[in-house]
Image (cartoon, rainbow, N blue to C red):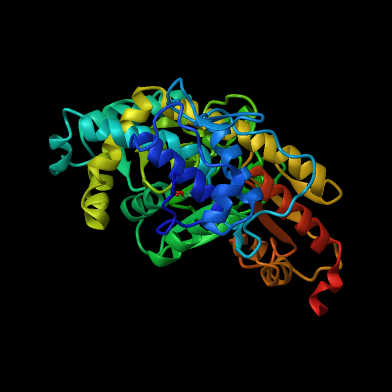
Length: 466
Ligand SMILES: Cc1ncc(COP(=O)(O)O)c(C=O)c1O
């Protein structure tokens, strides 16, 4: 009888059984057509319930690994394995208790769904191991990255609507690194850097740690407000303005084309450098020209694969006017010497084969399902979102004192959400009454369970006494 090896894996047991099944099929331990143990047999062997084994078999079936025949058992699929996972299953109708009841669920990180990524990364790693240029990828690269990798970065940016040229592309170890490189190379200690008043805290950590001054610009329903930006520039010239024009983090706002043009106009008038952090550009409801394309001569366009493809490979790209390239490349060298060519080759394969785009589309589609789920379960609360955003920005009812207070209560229930105060760039409490909730964690089933639990907590301010 098949005995899955579960000892060295993390995660819920049913996922580990399904993963062991995939491993053994790929390794040829289980040939096509092999009959798997019955639910009862495997449950007894592993000391779990037959329901757990059933979930594992269902998951394997959805991944195209096995097929079940009523009354006859479960068999390894005869037609061979799919290259990538088929689209994820439909959400169950009600919130059932996930296997991982005793696990913490972390909704503080806006990230893509990991289950969708795995088969793509597995296949790309296999390709990489067979690649004729693998040995080249073991060597040091020229400044800015290997030409093939810069070329792939340009292709990726062109897909986002930027007229990118490979010779103006540099590789970074993700967008956070890109922000550091930009601020380090293009501004000086003491300079004023502006961002939206509610913004991704990584911006503040870069600006403050490099000894620059940060100020948040007031926002409206489209993100950074141009009149407030202009008024600030009249008081003091900023060296750099960092904007998240699409699916702004945390507010999910999107700048219209007119707004982008207006921000670019102000950049020219006051002669500052624009940074277009377009990590979430692929989540726009309709394709939009990136902010950078309105003032390419003074904008550093920043993106990474962390949200659309994979986060842990840590790969980002920046595009800038030619005059800035040497300084930016020197900052990459100072900070990490070079971005891993192995990681970059992995990304290049995925981009050039079209798989990266396919995966980012799958992530977008998954986000749409999660947003529908949030509407269904949290619809009574006030929050901003996009139909395809990976998170929501929720305003707490007035009986809550703050997002941090709610986050502490949720933590007591093993749920981690981000209190909104950390997003207040002016440290004025603008985000205090909010929480940011990421939606792409683990399975739909778990997400449904967690959102149901959050809705319950949100409606019970007295839970703090329980
Ligand atoms: C707006 C924004 N910029 C940059 C980053 C950093 O991304 P990366 O993981 O590519 O470093 C994030 C991460 O959440 C982000 O939200």
